[in-house]
Image (cartoon, rainbow, N blue to C red; front, side, top):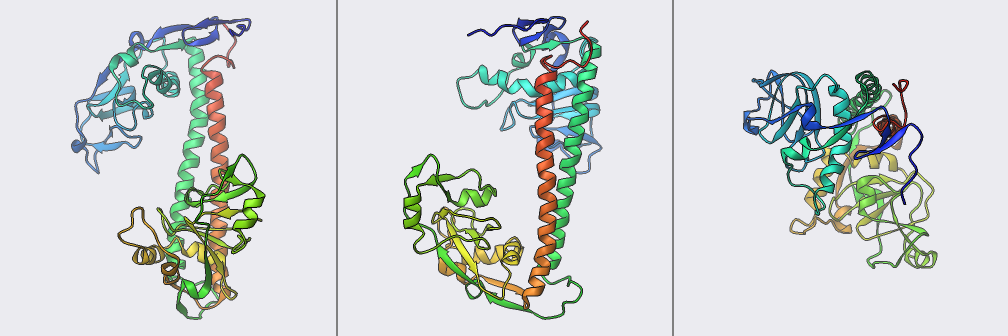
Length: 397
């Protein structure tokens, strides 16, 4: 069913756009070339950016272009997904496309936002496969794009650039916070730095001495559309307990006769990505699969501390040493989990004090990540509206 075109708009090859906008082929608006360098030409302390088939730019001591350009990977896993904008001196890989020398009626930053937001969908329409191995130059040259007036392009690109900078700055802040937490963890979880007021010794304990370790169900349940959440290794590894499978209340009641997840427990992965832990801080009514172990920390020990401690290099090494070395995928049995050694503060008070500091840092990072998700959604919404003319920043000419 063809939808009615709103007043002041027209239907074109690139969709419904304002009547005063034009369309044209990329090949008519810019030059398209590939680079001449190979990956081995990169230099760690190079003077100029070196664009390869990755979202992360390398460095190099040569430049083959000086000016405004948009670059995208020509093949590899980043095909149709890797895009860069630059205005300055740089070099680029032989399988990276450079779109540059923009005609006067095209703003380079406007092109970058439109191209990076629409090119993948275009190449996916041109193949019957679920992924794209490589792109040809004509895929870029024959792509049509909408053309508002140059002044409106500048307004659009400025608005999108402002929100993109907010997203980038927030992402950089999150990375800094995470690196700071790693440093604090290394000092506090090894006893290298002691909190004021704590002087008691640290002790070595086996995990089996400080927690009851229980198994999940070995049988694959019958899943239902909604009901009781059924946790597995994927939930802990991805730290996402919203995307779960579900089982019936009846099956749940049968499975939980020998165990029950409770607030304050720890779920640990024991198949595949082994040793990842999640502290259960929420009220829960769920079942879990054999790919997870349930740790019920005994009195006198802080479960929050144990959950944080599981992220330490010492703990990861102990998990690896106690795993089934020949198993594919990796696996650690309940008995071996019990044998994992920990070096922890003797008093629960010091454990809790350390856990509180690290938990506060986690809360700050989580709040920033939620804010980042919000900004990303705003950015995506603005691109969809501004790049199609659904929202206008200037009066129609």
